[in-house]
Length: 422
Image 1 (cartoon, rainbow, N blue to C red):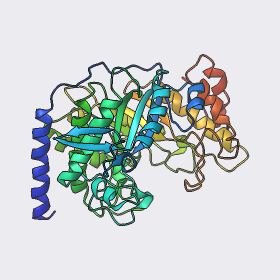
Image 2: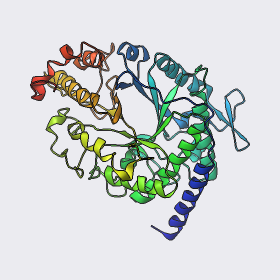
Image 3: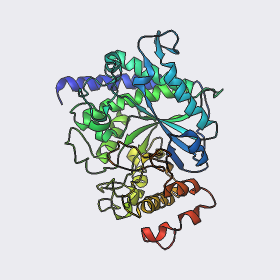
Image 4: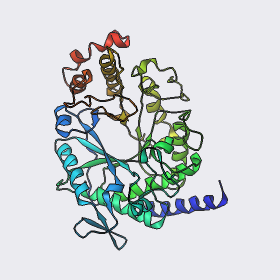
């Protein structure tokens, strides 16, 4: 790392320490809510999700669509450090509609906080990391918390969101968790910061997560802040080099170590235990997922490794293991006659494994509906045809946390190779 960058990240750490230690009590104080089960979904069709009986939901929020640098007086505003920051009322109304409809039915809603490249140059300057490449894959970038203006916009936006979705009147709905970015150990594709070492990326990301935590906890005592990792553990995603992707284990350990140096705080983990091969849902056959702490990948086959790893002394906060949610993972539908059966069986097996693991709070399935442009993957409970046809997995999902689960799951046992669910 160049000498100038070392100084820069040292200053970021000092700023973070001061901000963390100066954070006051939360505006709104309540305990973290409990859920009846771990069944969750990244929701696309709200009424259908409620019919399915979900207890957790994941929703994307794009800060590039939310902010309004033009300061339209008709748009809602938030005061931060003596300045007003405005937010798009139309986008807010759409988010409010989903969040309120879900949370008023007792669903615990988590926001996946993202920054997509915009057609507006000014928005990109404010939201996107200055080192992001001109055409980032998937249009997703790391956040600009490097410039003072970028930091202020980010903090003001997270404060505004947390106040709006933590208010006691619950007029706009209730949020219980904020996932900062997406799969950051493969940042090139999901949180682009240009070509960068793991240490430089993690230092920058830690600063961003600290800012988010301070902003959110200033409003809500219960809302959790999560970091996001994908399923590569002791190896990195092979499509990239060491400046584009990092092993999840190395990243997690470094992040935790640096967080302790700068005054530790209660961040948590949003993990994505996709199967070894995204196109083969039969995770029980994953060869790279072993029960060793240094396993190449952590998938549903060896998910116990993650729960156990998070109990290590070096990862605890105030002597307690950080919470884990599975915020995005699913099972492809093989293009074979028995493809829907295999997809459904994979969900049944994964759900039964997670159900009995105390360290895992939520299993939020991806996707609700197949997507036409997801690399040919068919991960949904429904197809993307005109009527969004239900697949075999749909009823398994609906009944997963009900007394009817055993009858719905019975078909899966011979597919997996099990005699019973014990």
